[in-house]
Length: 325
Image 1 (tube, rainbow, N blue to C red):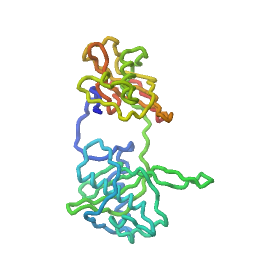
Image 2: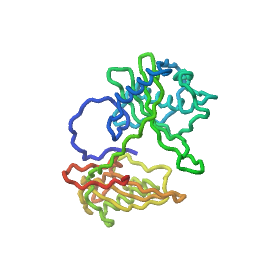
Image 3: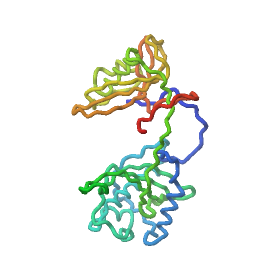
Image 4: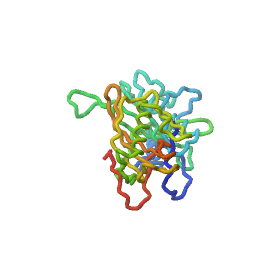
């Protein structure tokens, strides 16, 4: 499927070269270079962690989820992210009886008292990678769901909260090493302000644009019909295969401009569609899709499934409700 951003974008406020990094945290760089690096270097300076661990060439590393980025990462940064994530996995998975792959990264004797049983974790992923200025050190933030006892449960139930760990990776021409041990840190702060989106018009159920949206999403998500009938020529959009859902119902469609039922060829409208979908086992989800529609020969066709909704550039536009609030 070809994804691309809407044609109408907010004007750039100027570009500034910056270090490539992973997913942005809503708290900015509140726990960025100085805090992370300073805390870990301080930890290294105190006690048995005063150790710069040597890079072990050719050792296998555990596979981890790829980092999502808003700017390209260098190959060196990507390697540092994977190296840091694999180190966190080895650190969590080590026990007194079996240190596992921990010795690949550090001398296990420098860790102190290892756990009698290894920590169970899942969904390990890199959150961000930042290079410390004028240094060989990179700050890597890794997240994982870790099994813990539910302190509020009387039956000894376990939970899987999302935990975050800061790791410092040293990268040189000779290879990579870790500095200190992973440091548990707080989760990124949640940002609550409403985003002002451009979809100020309600598209009526009888509108031809809405019919296109409904038929396109039915083909795209549920394999209902030939999707090429609802796609603009040259747009490389293909249906999800195999179709993940059995049924789909479009409950709301909003647009940036009021779409005509007899549009002129080349007319464009951006829409935000809300749909309810269900699987063969009657599992249900509500989802939203940002789409760009283009008119051809008096009918609307889907040009793109957009990466993000279209933000409003009109001062005073009504904020779009945030379903996470």
